[in-house]
Length: 529
Image (cartoon, rainbow, N blue to C red; front, side):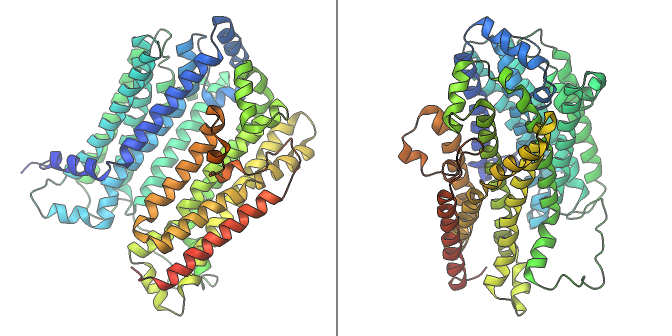
């Protein structure tokens, strides 16, 4: 029996397990590129419009840090500049989740050991997870190429854009499969791989924003993809860097997997204290101990995003030189001035991301139950409500802290040209005004966890996805207000720039409390486990 015996069957099983999640990833990322391409084609119909845009953003370091440097004024190059990096990061995240789910995740759940007892090679799960991720990235790249060709772009440039996105996914599939060999926890492996992705983004951002250290862009795998320059004398040879990195990382993971036991990691588990710390005496302290690493990582990301996006507000006029784009932006944030409208959109999108953290933190209840870690806690003098309340307080405090941090950081960055104290206060308030929208998502997740525990993960993320889609796409396509009203993100005050009113915040908070109470009441009455 070879080391990869049974790999084909494992790939089919993994694809069947991901028959909903994987097409959703591919559809959303393809839609991001397609919608961006269509909107840019409409907003900048002439070469003069595109040249003005490229000239305006070409000298703005903050915008270069976010999207990369604009290297050409052709429509295809503008599409690649605006959507390529976002889609590449999304593809990298898709690879990370796929690979770790089907390698370290299966080991942690005990499925890999069961498979190893059958006629399956030792390296077959690793090879299957890697093959599925590489195939998904390639399919995504080809779909992006087809979409761009259908929108009238040259085939060569469209292929280059698709490969730019796919190549980032290939490299981070390699990063993920190495990370899966290092720890015994899928969560830790995802954290390592995501951290590498974050470092790659920061290296590229600093290199693009500062010509004096532009070499940093070439250290980052995201920089390799970006420098491919679709639709402008494509540098096809750069794909060799991504392919070589993918092959090298995969070979390293193969060698590491052969040197460890199934279920173990190469990094030693840090032994805990012989006695628990004095503060670790209640379910709230336990929940914080379990989630604090994830929380600090998210908080740091929000702080960096606040500084970068706040600084970018100084060049927003150049970025939004098209009157059509400005009108589209006003549909989201109201006619309260271009910069204020920009911040409204920024904080709405930040609230959606913070809500994703809140849902993830709330779903820790589900994982603790299904993985049978909650039962020992509940065997002590701890009731279900008290146990759940610890995780819910963490889930509710997280988005509040993150939105406060991004508001304050944006105020500091935007106020560097004057009036910093005033800008910090008003943008801090604008960020905090979005907090109840994230709490609604916590309430939804708790309600589903209490009433329909088997559907907790899918329904919780599905409701967030629908709400986010309605709030982002709805104003642009002018959906009826009855449809828009289903998203809580639409109801938050459009701050800064408009008068503050507490009524929608009270309604949102009240709804979140009712949903949470409903879920906790159902949790008390249903069978556990």
